[in-house]
View 1 (cartoon, protein in one colour):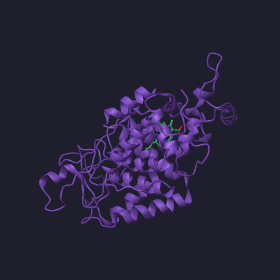
View 2 (cartoon, rainbow, N blue to C red):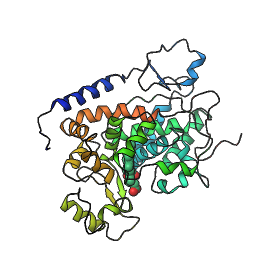
View 3 (cartoon, rainbow, N blue to C red):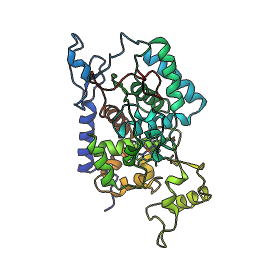
View 4 (cartoon, rainbow, N blue to C red):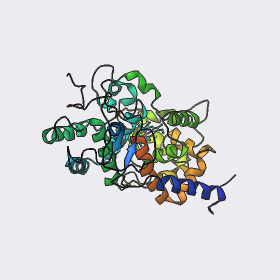
Length: 350
Ligand code: HEM
């Protein structure tokens, strides 16, 4: 059935769900963010109870490292001004950190057999910027700010610099002491079904709206030709049918050498701006990854895509809500959980 441009009752109900979910987030500096509850709670700031160890908080570093936000913002702004592609790379780095074993900076640990050394991490970038921020913060507030919190806040700042929405980052994540390459087997690489992506997201407390809205991160950044080669090659005498003919022709020419170092913009229309164009591309069969395009083919996700095409501002607002949820995934906050690394690349030796 062809979708009408007039909002259907179904679109309107999605709209309402998104608005409710968005308004549940709030953006109040005084609120704290529970580790177990994906919506903001209204716990009072004072007095602090021992249980606060288990919560992320907007005030977490207020006493111990008040310059934190300013320093992270300055470093990200300087780096992205020099190399705009870094913004997308940070966003992806944060996703890869959170999607397996939670947002614990395990992706940053740099040793044989760590997540960072695994195949799915091969094209990740942004590590040096996190190291630079950490080095600066260690001078001002030693052994205080976790690498997981730095990566989460830097990702937010990078997104805003490319025109994306702002969101409040609650702090208090600890860094993991370990990182195992094998867990990256579950990182989605672009050839998965919608069902398996939904199952992965649901296992982390993220829902179908989070899947569609967070995939919208592909409004910026690029992919290596290797990640789309399976869409371009002749399979059983046919090409991937859900791809625009001219776009296919362009991609086949661009990726013909199968070079590892050849890249294609994920959003063919406005690659350097964080906007809703990604969803409009899907309507035109111009989604670059198979997993992107499938969001428009699948009846569970297509209505959400249609809503974002018609209302890009809802996409941006919902993106900020879902990013807070992603950043709160399986965080280490208890007194015996994790540590504050002094160097993001290595677990502390003490
Ligand atoms: C939902 C399933 C997802 C799949 C299957 C997927 C897959 C991919 C793939 C294959 C690439 C290209 C990698 C390469 O060849 O270098 C990529 C890039 C990227 N992904 Fe995703 N991704 C998903 C979700 C996300 C999410 C949730 C975010 C962030 C919230 C994200 C942010 C990015 C960004 C920004 C890039 C571009 C990176 C750069 O330019 O350096 N992705 N993704």
